[in-house]
Length: 258
Image (cartoon, rainbow, N blue to C red):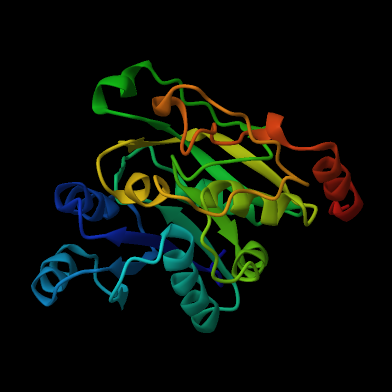
């Protein structure tokens, strides 16, 4: 993959500075990856502080207002497309910390295999859980994947995600997975990479999706209501592959990469 450029895509709102600092500092475990950072609602002072934590040769896009995770990352992906015809992208969140066991290079190699779309990694919520997590060099087919352990994909999938346009998505993980799956790609979870993802921390994605947003197309996803607020968002569970409709599965087969 010597001719393929590797990018870390990170979008953040400036409401979790401690988590963002830890995330940026953890990027030192990676080699040969360049950061594409999309900041929303950062003051000039904070821009300088954040830049000081970034690896050398990082790229920054500063948005004056909060636009949502999908739209913010879309700005980054559009710039990546302009910069590099052949590339892999590892999409992460600001409440993640990468470890020596975070193997984005291996995930990148898998993502460039024929017919492969999104490749998600394994994750734990805290350092205490690391020792209990089994790490094995294997992949598991999973139609709907999540950013939790990092989400890696190549330029073909970048094109499909950018093709979604600016949207007010409730669950960008689901929409990105569908963009890949409905176009005939297989999405996977790689069990040989591990990162910390402190999900449900105050601020970040949760503060954005707690309001009314665009839910997945019912032609493709059957949303499941949930009674407990802690189990989902806006009264629904976050979709998984069991929520795919028969029409979604049929569409995948029609476009499946042979």
